[in-house]
Amino acid sequence: MESDIAQAARIVAESRHLVAFTGAGISAESGIPTYRGAGGMWSKYDPARFASIDAFLEDPSYYWSFFKEERYPVLKAARPNPGHEALARLERSGRLRSVITQNIDGLQQMAGSKNVIELHGNTRTIACLKCGRTYSMDEIHAQLASRAIPECRGCDGLLKTTVVMFGENLPAAALREAFEQAAACDVMLCVGSSLVVHPAAAVPGAALDGGARLIIVNQDPTPLDHRAVVALKGKAGDILPRLAA
Ligand code: OAD
Image (cartoon, rainbow, N blue to C red):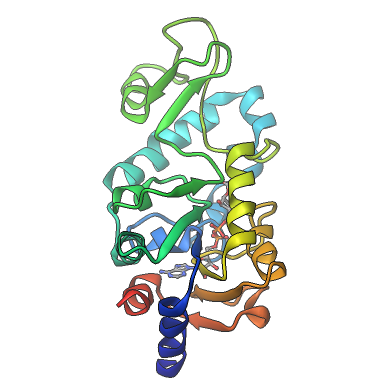
């Protein structure tokens, strides 16, 4: 393991165009549960009910009670951990060009990263599906103290977080930028993702197809481990600071 970390650190140091691709695992040490596996969100909540656009449009109250009771308190309390901070340091030092993230928690930006491509939207912004008026997470949480479904102040439209739900398209500009970065990079650092949710999971494959070398940092095996130059098993908060040193 030690020599694998040294090899990965050398590849990072020698890269010309380094890009990171992150998933829920990088935020696990900040107290935000991942989606899959034991203790993951989808073992407790059925994604077909709590994270699908059809179910949301049919009855938004399930989502908003999940937001109020489960998501808001966890996201509000979470702070960046040494993994996020290591990626922010790599960007500040000029080595890391961008972080492509599937995460909706905003922790990478809170750690100081400027070039963050959010493939799955975020929970910071809640928008009216009819008039487009936007609200902060705090404003909406305050509304949920007295009502099951928050209301738009400007019209009678339905409010929704900008988090991409199953059945919705990913934001086109973010997806395009992610594939541009994948094609341009010579090293992609994949951190804390099961790499099974498409189309996001196709981004590391596109980097490989463009000739980039892949470094994977993840607790569990991923379907791309066999194509990575190094696949490091462990916690992002332990490993990333050593890669960025
Ligand atoms: P997953 O929950 O699928 O995978 C998280 C991965 O992180 C797992 O493979 C864990 O082994 C690993 N992991 C856990 N803790 C870790 C740690 N401390 N350090 C390193 N690795 C760790 O999460 P994602 O791949 O991000 O989509 O899931 C992709 C998408 O599926 C999410 O963006 C979400 C979900 O449905 C939407 O909400 C649209």
